[in-house]
Length: 337
Image (spheres, rainbow, N blue to C red):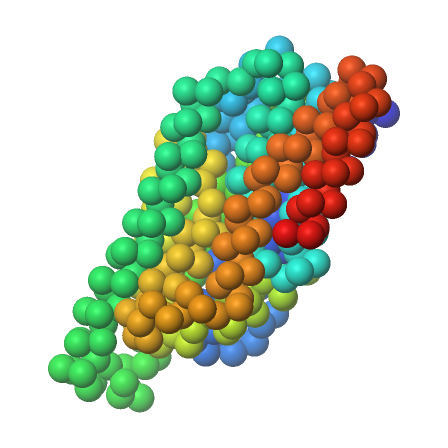
């Protein structure tokens, strides 16, 4: 029964991953007008995700499954708790239309279980968190710098805006978005199926295939709100700016994936968009409500998933009923925040 429940939650989680983070990979191409139809943008994203997960998703899956807490802890019951805590956090964010980092909520949920059993590989966790801080910052700085360079380039060479050259840039930005979706498949599919691999319910190869299929389906069927947020509600992007952001994000995520690091891909893309916006409009862009909303959810989400998984372990595995009161208090406080 627990195995079936774990699979159901993992599949639901995978589709929400596609809706939240992976679908946002084509948000730039859609927001810039290179892909005019939202459904087509989501289809391209889904195809890239499937190929990325099926070809290169194994390293991050191993990290999620056995690199944060000991593999001996990953029973099927605890796998259900990890997946449920992460899925619930992500589902709430999707209802709000926020492109949330699935890596953060998954790692937070795994850590919550590890804390409940006082067994966490803190060295590995610290290394992962450092990547979480460095990569979005690098994306912002690079995007800000390239934004200034693009502004000068477009002024100096007006041919960039010529109708004859525009089709080439459209092809490039769609290609860059596809590459970013590919990188999302490499990294984010692990969040749903890594715990099942750790519990030895499925193999790494099976996890890569299932991840590609169901994260891709989530992007195609449920990604509309996230792609609108990333593509059109933060700042307007030219084709050249979009190419720069998507390419930079894809490269950063692929590098992290090769090292087996579960990285916040959505944060990398979104901070790149914000960096371009800051280069054009100044740092007043941080005053926009959508920026504040995304930043707040990023801060709360890993702590919420950690608290949920820890509380569920204490309640159902250790029969500590007093933890229920603590969980409810945390949820009320989080909702109030």
